[in-house]
Image (tube, rainbow, N blue to C red):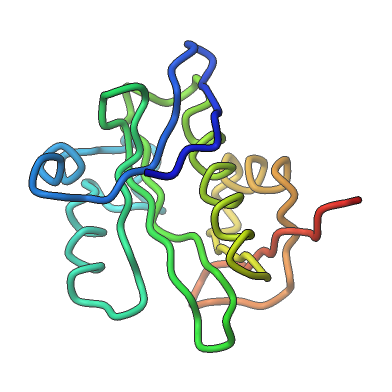
Length: 157
């Protein structure tokens, strides 16, 4: 379990856990809001399949207390950079800080393994752009397919 001690605005503790025999169905059924389907799949099942077929990506279940509320992927690129990808928070769980806590938790864990930490997002996904910028990600000017790559700034000492 990856636990940074963060909570959402409802006071629920947000943790990241491996996808396993007990939770994979709940993770697979995670669905975004309809207006987000231009940027993410209709169900997290697609991300789970991608991680099964990929040597790069790893899936994690996002929990609020003991309830699956989302999915996020992570990977290590050939250059050693850590990547966050495939985040999906269930529509019913959005708007209360779950996504922010998921990204912060995963960033803390990945940054402890090495730098840089990167992610990408579609530039028209203004909610994602605001969230990532508020967490310290800055666009690099590099594009991955039709998504803008952003990198987590070095922590200030």
